[in-house]
Length: 72
Image 1 (cartoon, rainbow, N blue to C red):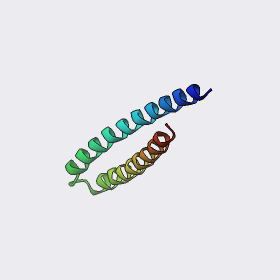
Image 2 (cartoon, helix red, strand yellow; image 1 turned 180 degrees about the vertical axis):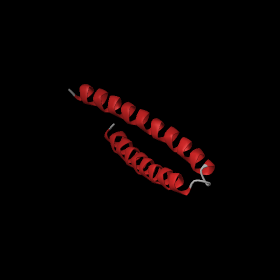
Image 3 (cartoon, rainbow, N blue to C red; image 1 turned 90 degrees about the horizontal axis):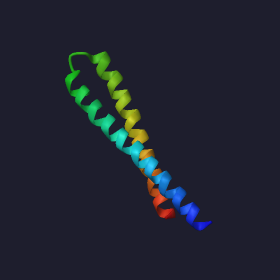
Image 4 (spheres, rainbow, N blue to C red; image 1 turned 30 degrees about the vertical axis):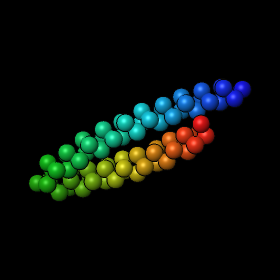
């Protein structure tokens, strides 16, 4: 039984790690877009909100992964 729990936690950590990688990639792209969008304040504001949301999600996923890592 314990082995199954460990495998499940490892799979969950893997899934969370993939989400973290996706969010990090999204943040890099948003950062580049923000730098290029200075001539368009409305679009820049939209990108800033998307970046803040992605950063919040990333921080949450990092916390979740850390919690699961403590279980292992």
